[in-house]
Image (cartoon, rainbow, N blue to C red; front, side):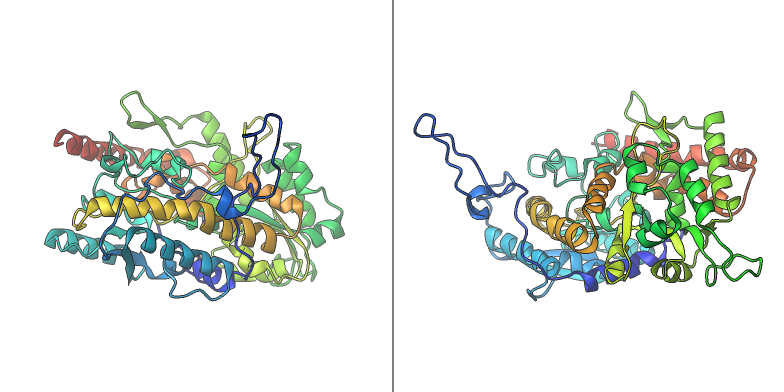
Length: 491
């Protein structure tokens, strides 16, 4: 898969655009004390320090690493999420700074880092060289998931450290990590440190002003009544589109469109419709069981939506779409949540809703994330126990403070325009789902991306196209499981 440049752009925008605010504590800032005198209830408001436990994790104060370093290999573009040099009075920056400072003081370590360019081949080479030399250069590494570094044999099995790293806790992203485990081996994990889990989650933005001008149904009401479907979205897009300059040709720079998609936001259409590529089997492996008449019908529906509705535009160049949205010539813009940083100065109101249901029979709204970096401990780490301890503590702190600073304060309170949008943001994040073949994309031939890529390429005959690729996809899946099975047998 060609990784889109917008990920880098959005991460940079995110780092630059977050606003200052007060620090955010736990969701419950008060407590009721029913101990002591029978029948007495103390409802005195408590401070955050009084309500929060001494340690957010279960590690206690038993670890002291004697001033050793904890060195991280990170993507250059993700530095603001993992390392900041000083507190500067901005809520997100300072939450990262405070997190790291607290962990350094608690465990007597010095958190350091080495940045590396966003290039998969470079990452493979750097990590491979370190492991081969057993140089102890990195205590933890944070590659992008789609580079497939986790299948290179460079990393320790994180489940061997599950007495320290408690993957049942909410600061670990179970939906992702469950799909990263194969035959008792999990070489990478995603946790609350990985802010891409929020910024790269796809959603539908809409122009409230244009909606009002055209007197169209409220997407909020449609979502709540479960009538927010692909068919309804298609209808609204058709109603909104207009050849404003009357030249008989639709063009984003001059006319009004209903909706815009690019490659990643288009790829979300299949998963958000409830499609699951692979199904877990009794032995812990997975099999492709999706190919049937119903799936072909879904493909045809998405193809028709994208190419046979003049109100819907697909393009790999998002710039004209952003301009049109900001100028109320685009009703719906489908993008990752990270673009909220770029919309905060939008003069007119906008809203955010989840991707639509395939139809009203779909059980839940489903949110799609187009990728994240993950966390791994290289085999050459000088002290794997130290790595496990620091990662557990960093993710716990991130869950309770950094996540809140990003999502609760900045996205919900600063960047969203109303209570409806805040409600929808919760719905979007709460319904974030992951597919096994997506988490393991590099090893499965990007099958979950394949079908929308065929739509984008205007291939109306998916049966013929898939027939040519089916055996190759199956072979790649089998090879992945053979690799993990062989490793499990070797101990």
